[in-house]
Image 1 (cartoon, rainbow, N blue to C red):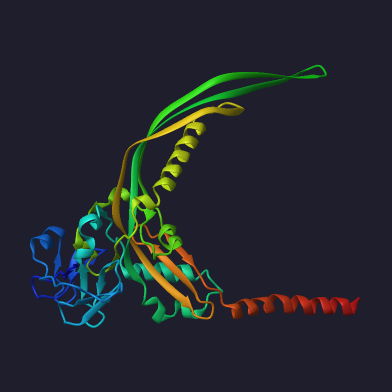
Image 2 (cartoon, rainbow, N blue to C red):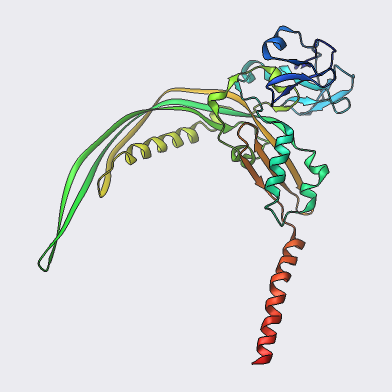
Length: 346
């Protein structure tokens, strides 16, 4: 059974929301600000139990501020009350095996995400206005997406034959001398935090298109960072992409060893092995600003995303066919009439 946690201002009782710009918790009512230590020393509002609907994945919770029912699906871990907009955290969703190890707090506020979106859209001429209307832009949301992070130590060795050529000309003859060497390379490579999307319902292009994150800035997970944002709990584990990630790491290690063989004209790998040791999977919530748009006519979902830490942009945009037709006419008609005139004069 999940519980609701709502972080309240010790001064006025208003909801506390994490401010990415100040990296503090802010109250929008009395304008008080609190750091992480001050927030942890206070007590969140008394949690209330959630009630699961019969046979379905949606879950009902009672908002601790206004008493309205909050409806979520089974992976949502932080959200807002639709009626009073009070931020709530469903603590039970992030307990036990689903308790994240790390979190990267949002480093940019919504205003900055909107600015990045507007700058990006200036270069996109054929997008429907509905995608960047004022109402649509207002829907940009800060979401903590779940990622599984893989770390290990890769130990590899490589045996190869490498050729070095010397070419010269004497008289009318061209000579080539080939010297062949036995080459061996060995090395150990630490691998830290290879990410994989751990939410089935999310669009993989969306959540992986904003990678990489600066993982050295991750913090131990604290629920307070989620206040004021949406957060999703993972519903995928390491077993679902373990082999894929290990294969990727092995390939990278093999290519790294091979690329270390330089100053030869050709290299032929004879034997190569990579052993993965000290393997470890960890779970992190990482910040993404998202904007989605559903094209009802095509029944397709389009999106714009911004890495909430670095500002990297990723998007899949709809195309307005009418705008494309106008461009075609602007280019084609003048050329067509010019050809008619030339043909008439000839």
